[in-house]
Image (cartoon, rainbow over all chains, first blue to last red; front, side, top):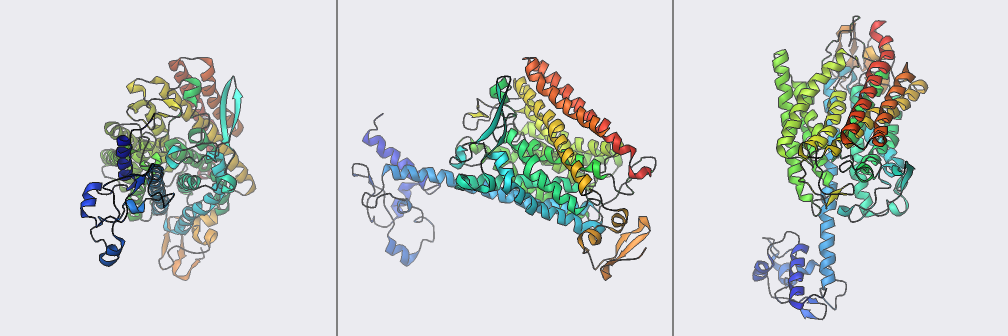
Length: 564
Length: 60
């Protein structure tokens, strides 16, 4: 189609406006601008009247205090200075600006998610006894280093090595090789094969952005396990377990859900809605972490004193509720990177839904906290602070998968149910399977992660449309309540995979670790507290740390355990 | 006991996958998937966990 000169001019003006990314209107700017230095041209030497550059000499003299002269046509990169600005220059600049916006958005959201590690660290440390504070804090700290290393070596390649081009990040075409096998005539993507050590063609700007964003998600998964196993987990076993989780378990499910693997293709191959849909990772991140926590928690066993001889549970209070509440606030803040950031951009392909994703996140967290407090108040007579925090986190975990597909009313319902669910689950794990979980991680992340996955299949309202389709299926993700039962089936297959395959894989590997390294510390170390036996230093050396229930104490000020 | 539990957990997952080929009906697939999930959960908390409950530290 041939573009008429007048249309071309109009297109150029629109492109420049976009290229200046959120600048003031062009004509208004021109009115204030000093005299033009040179006129920009289009192909065919057509001058663009009215487009000018600020007077550099005057700028140098007076500056630009109101910002009206900064970011003009002078800042558009031109391929050929003699020609001036061409249509191609404008198009390139507009394209790069779009990708720059998306890069910046994704990276900043990734930084927010990384900061969630601080929230996890103080929530978990606050919920355990002071004698284990250094040990718990260090586990939360080291998941960053150990997990990142494992993910860089092979985790990223397994997860995203076959993801293919991600349009919002400008392509990422180097990660395009998925290992696929065929079963009954259907292709089943298993794992990616490009991007090991971020070497070769994966040394690419877009790949680096997606690596950072996915890495901090993996880090969240690994930190969930440390909560469940706190106060009795050997640091060496923790290190081995974390590396495996970051290198194999998490990336494998991540590939199946997000990397073009078989779960994401259930829609294309079996007509099940849009395949397994998990917007920001209720399943990929939280359920994988929660189920791994369950597998390791079983093997490690309960803390001494958690259960009486008749099997009835005791409450072992944490040492600092202010840590818990503050940590929950940090996590809620970081979640605004977790969910809205999962659009992988703020420009194009339906990314403007970041507003509704953020509001859904906020609403579900608030209603989760509200519901949990109300439940505890009615059942036990007091508004329990730690369960208020867990209710907040439960709501946030549950809304993570559906946040991009549901409306605010659904977010409120999902969060509310999550808040009740977490209270029931904590009691259930204490009373029925008797799996000790000092921080409630299995209930918050495992149970509510699965609830979040299920809720996509129920509440997705068919109004989201990220670039025309999701997982290769045209149209919007729609749940059972809005007419698509197939989407619910896809979510159920995802849940079955999490509780069946991922749990088994986690359990098997940690079983081997148990045999070789041993998962649990000795009785003496557990009674003394793990800070000295495992870490060699007390977290609170200037305080007398009480371990009265076992008739022992640590003379903290001396920095060494007391004789019993 | 541990192997039996793990076997049940895996069997539940495989049943859910098999449902994709057994029927093309969404209701049928959903029912089979739910059955698979139930088997996996029972294998986990009912069978596998009983091995650990029998050896629990608070019973010693």
